[in-house]
Image (tube, rainbow, N blue to C red; front, top):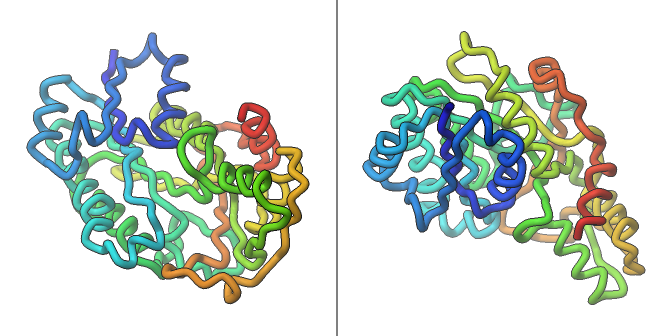
Length: 286
């Protein structure tokens, strides 16, 4: 039976991986860590943990994700999104582990007019995006076996996210303003967790590092996303569309970050749920 280490286990994706792991107890032993149990910025600590517990697979669900704060906390963003990832990759190589790492749509410029494929040229427009790309590059340079999954607009029933914020504002306010000129794909973390487990089973081993794109099926703006949240949450709050220029923020967001999902669908042979369907299920849970 193989041993899986899940880092960042208290976050959105980490909690969804915990939930799904119950279905794989006969295949894997799971070790869940967050910063209190394992500091992934400490290479020696990772080395010892992996060696002591005979880890075969590392799923890295830990990251610095405060997009605007990263513009000021550059060193911290790179410490968690590049240096810690390099530590995991080096240990994975030394112990012949498979590393599964989650990256982001923010590595792209957002200036495309067609869905991004895995081989498109990265051009991050923010510190957060640049630090996440640096993490991908650290994995490539390490020589470890890895699966890198880029995702977008992540939400779940856990932690803080756009869906929960909109539901709260829908109760507190009569109207909210949401940008309508940023287009992408919402991703339910539970659906991402299913794809991660599937890729562990089926990702080609002859490719040293396999890169995959994943979001829920369909495309929308943040405005469309917010409208659906209010609809499914039964909120009377009006949603007003605004332009990005009317909502200034420190970090530049991709205006278009739609993923081409063909490679992921072909590799996993999974049906990917439509974003509105997954959203409705989660809001019903909440």
